Length: 104
Image 1 (cartoon, rainbow, N blue to C red):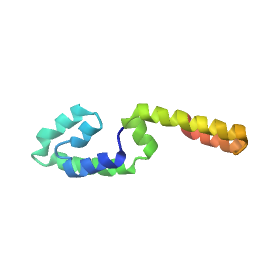
Image 2 (image 1 turned 180 degrees about the horizontal axis):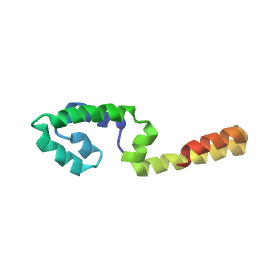
Image 3 (image 1 turned 135 degrees about the vertical axis):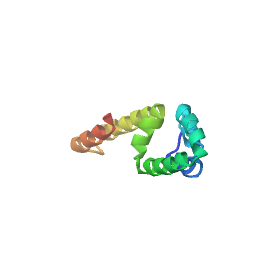
Image 4 (image 1 turned 180 degrees about the vertical axis):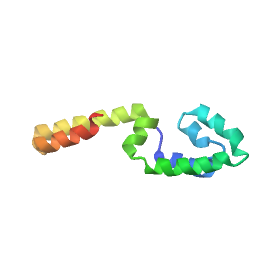
């Protein structure tokens, strides 16, 4: 279970070593960062990656770095939407709008 904030903190403080990539289960990127960390290139890249991670929506982060968890959350939310519609809590228009958001 990956967390966006943890990945961003790792990118900011240890970006030169590429530890955020190992955390995000992208070890090849992490191994590429290690030699460049000693000359400072990876440090700047880590800071940039930190900003990019923080700008990602939670949905996009999960789609990219934790697709299995995203699928579980997506199916759970769609199931809850169906239940709310069946109980009459939300209307057809709101159901369609919310379903479209989680359909992809």
